[in-house]
Length: 362
Image (cartoon, rainbow, N blue to C red; front, side):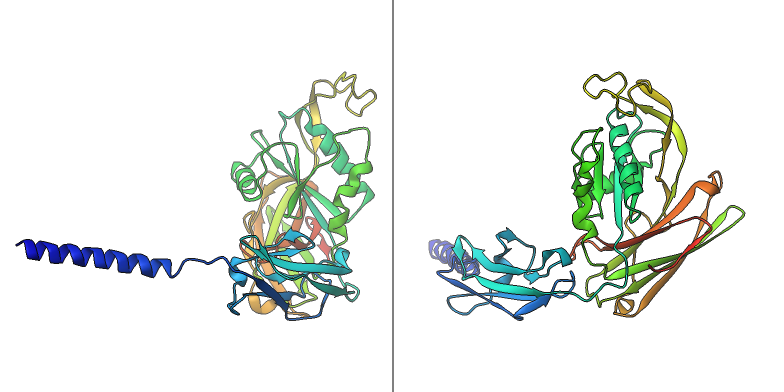
């Protein structure tokens, strides 16, 4: 009996040791040196053309997926490198794994051809009628739009009579928006105005978004019949795009009158501000671009991959019930974004039109 027990114990120990040794053999080892190579010597700065960075250790093993790759000292996701039109020039690329740095290589961009589509910028403004500082951002964004017709602002309300709880919570979670007022630009990142209601100089916060080359454009045909709004959204491509894309279509309403808290009333820190004598609650505050409904959901629908080639076009048709809405105040906004978990992030381009009218590619 003792011999049998001893034999079993030895077997258990042997299996345990074998399992541990097998697991240890798969442990990621700290390299003694690493080296990078690029599959191109230059790249077009159009946001689409890309370079593949390959990282190898001292034994020639490809460790690209487990290394951090840096472009101009900023870590990127994955090992594909691309540049926007406003990033032209020479850039340095290197990799690092467990503190072991690679050699540094340089890459020079090529100027892209002139874009056939105009670059549009979309700002999603997170607000609420209980937010006393929000009139400042609303005022500034309205003036930004007046100054630049290629900007459109959509209001996403939180916890008030104009709010859509699902849309508000979805966008907040997706883009880490934690407070109001907040501005989400091109579904890419939040931007911060300077907090001064008396100055519009900070419109420059959106300049990098205008400078991106549009690789896609949109056209909208809309028609109102009774309480039905029909929408045909077209997306044209000036480049072949491998990443998965989504089309988002929104319906917003202008000239929506609702009360708005106002911390600028009799505020001596901002004498002469536009809301100085408007009351601490502005009863007839006019809200523009208020989100109403989306036939695609706020996250969009997937564009057919075979349509995402240069010179091709994707078309989608929608029908919306506009019962209870003022048709004369409605606008349709459509934009194309990269889907989740893609190499690239954010919006490619947008288009908007008054409901019942048409807007061609521009």
